[in-house]
Amino acid sequence: MNKTSRVFLFILLSIALFSCSKEAGDGGNSTIYGKITAYNYNAEFTTLKGIYPAADEDVYLIYGEDRSYSQRVRSNYDGIYEFKYLRPGDYTIYAYSKDSTLTLASEIYPVIKKVSITEKQQTVEVEDMKIFR
Image (tube, rainbow, N blue to C red; front, side, top):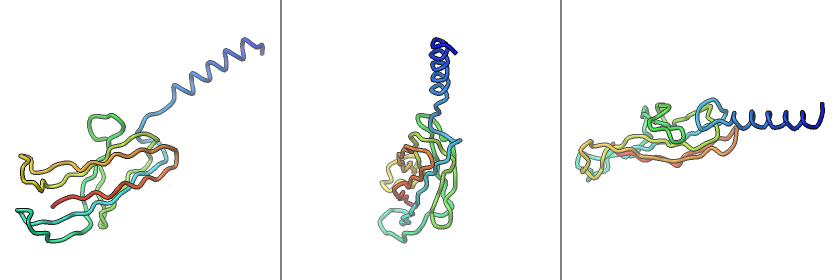
């Protein structure tokens, strides 16, 4: 193989490798996990009735700059949730909480956490999410 052929082959291989880079999403071997804690108040949010793990709570994951959620899981009995098989990238995680200010028409709002996976086979723990019930 002459020098020109080797340079051409190198360029083709380089283009192929860089064009295969993947964005945030499933198909990897990293994990994001965290915990949700529920703060249970009375209807007027004046008396705290209890603090406990938010079991069976919907938790959503958005890949990168996507506009809607890409995955949804439910927390276990300890309020723990987990998203597996992710590639390196930026992620948004959220769950819904009651509006403790009693000012939103929807009466709920998202509690949002941003996380990044920076390498393969990484496990990222998200800061605890606190929701009102």
